[in-house]
Image 1 (cartoon, protein in one colour):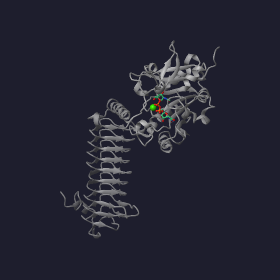
Image 2 (tube, rainbow, N blue to C red):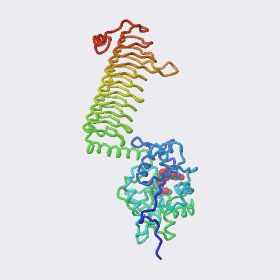
Image 3 (cartoon, rainbow, N blue to C red):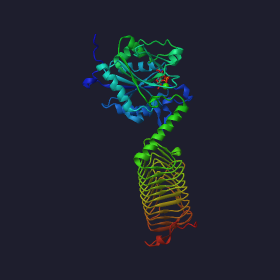
Image 4 (cartoon, rainbow, N blue to C red):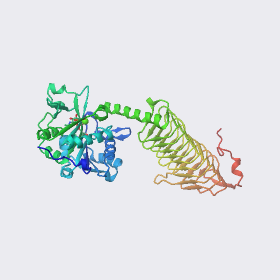
Length: 489
Ligand code: UD1
Ligand code: CA
């Protein structure tokens, strides 16, 4: 009796649905945070799986995600990765096993004439190519497609995993979980990776017959392939050769192992493909989403996080952290800087010990020196703030010099106010700029000034509160070299 083809893959019309299981807590993590929210390479585990899944979904069907523990946070992590329309969420109210998790999606999926790829939220390194090969084998099995294809690997130590039981002819028979396996079955080294393709309708039909009659009292998804086999359906096994790629994370020790692997991959690619010098790869941490240009040098202890972009021929000094920022070409960031959500244009110098955050913008050729904090502020081209300053909510023009110890007093206890400083200004050391306040172009403030009122262009002010001393001719500001009227050397 010849079977009907299971999928219309050969005609190219069978749609693919994807279901990601992410409702479990992950007891072995010993954490209050759901396992799939733990971070690998700076991104939640579930985000890694979602990215891979959406790479497979060419026809823009959303991926389905089963959520339960910390559902809201998991949903947020997924949306951040695939966008509002990239995912549909299904809630599993009580975590009664992987079979129950899939069953939670029955209203959405059971009637679909599709192939369903089931993934686990805790298997972050699986590659789209591998899943593509799994799907291909599923759809072409014996020329008509299988009812189910499961991904298996051989492990030297299979402890803890579900084992693939085969009959005397080597055909798939069923999966047995570690806790339900006989001593002989525990000798089997071929394990179920928890990644499957199913013909969707056959899956849900079989799922309704799964019973929690096992050591854990759970509804096992792993019972389904055996049920389908007993029904006389074709179940095929896709044996993969890279166990590491498809293994799940169950403990924090495994999480750390994966972190090391992912980090190694990223750094190798930066060195071999992008031409980046990494002085000490053992102690350099670069997100897989970062981009770094040719001949840039990363010192030991550097962290480059999120979607940071660093240009060519930059130097990043020891102990610096750069997060979600954009750095131009030829930039020198010296030791121990923290740069978050900021932009540094070409040929700037930053640090040591500088802190740039919340949309700081340092324009071409500008310099931010020791112990300077820049928040939500722009420093125009070739402007310098070299020592011990706080510049918050400020807009500073070009070629201006900010003397040591300058503070924009931007907060009156209730609200933040802006400071605006023009071009070619000399702010004397220890000037307090009490915002909202404006200092016109080419003006000068004396050391220790407390500026409470706007300063017109071409004007010298000094004192507490600062008073106008005189109008300056256009040459006069040049007499006050570099650090304004400061006394420091
Ligand atoms: C599962 C398989 C096992 C396989 C292993 C591979 C079952 C019964 N066992 O075991 O054969 O070798 O994966 O890694 O499927 N989840 C839910 N709701 C639940 C339970 C789990 O959403 O009620 C999710 C978890 O969040 C996780 C995934 O399903 O993402 C796998 O669950 P987990 O408990 O890690 O299964 P394993 O014990 O690893
Ligand atoms: Ca697992």
